[in-house]
Length: 291
Image 1 (cartoon, rainbow, N blue to C red):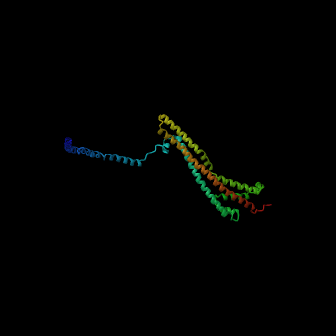
Image 2: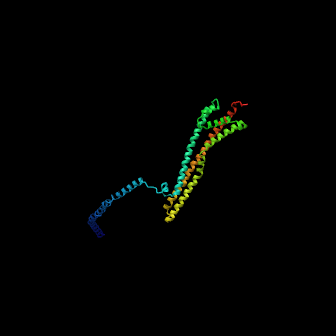
Image 3: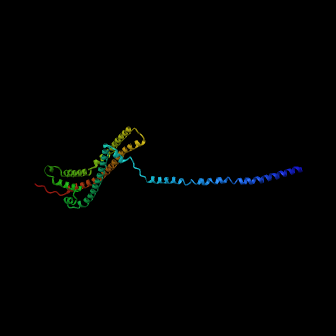
């Protein structure tokens, strides 16, 4: 038992001695690996500034893209330059229709406004005059109310000869009605043009569209390329004709309906004035007829 204890103690001493001899060498060998690991770090960080030049062109490219202006190869200018004589004549007709419509609308609105002022003037000055002749002279030249008053006066002075066989009431009524019809025909000047433009402008634009699509498809067939960029441009330019036709027709139709309504209101005032004038002319004292 004692021998075994001694053997164990001697073995323990040998292990401690061996460990003390080996551990210093391992301690010296372990610090060496971190040295190579530290050296790649500068090598990895060295190429880091390289992406900076790549970012600069990207920023520059983004800046130029925001201010870059790309010319549209399609549109009205391309349609006019690339269109044939039929397309140009169609565009010219639509332009003439549009200008004529707006001219008539503006002039008729001015005339109706002036007629409304003339109606107020007649209400203020005509009925306060001692005679119909003096009341008519107070009205401005070109006024429809003065024209109707003078027509009624002329009917009373010309009621002689064969016309004298007609009843005076009937003769004055006929003369005043002719004057009213003349005024109404003047107020309707230009409305027929608006109605014509409103009904035909869409079809003129549609004709230009059909003609443009026909030539576009013919050119595509000759070129032998049916890609989207070859089809969308010419066909889109042809469809502009339809848009122009609608842009011309819609104001003409709206203007026609609006002017007709305003003419009706103006003519109601004219007829009211004529009815009162008719009653005044019939009630005026008559000069005795010669024996």
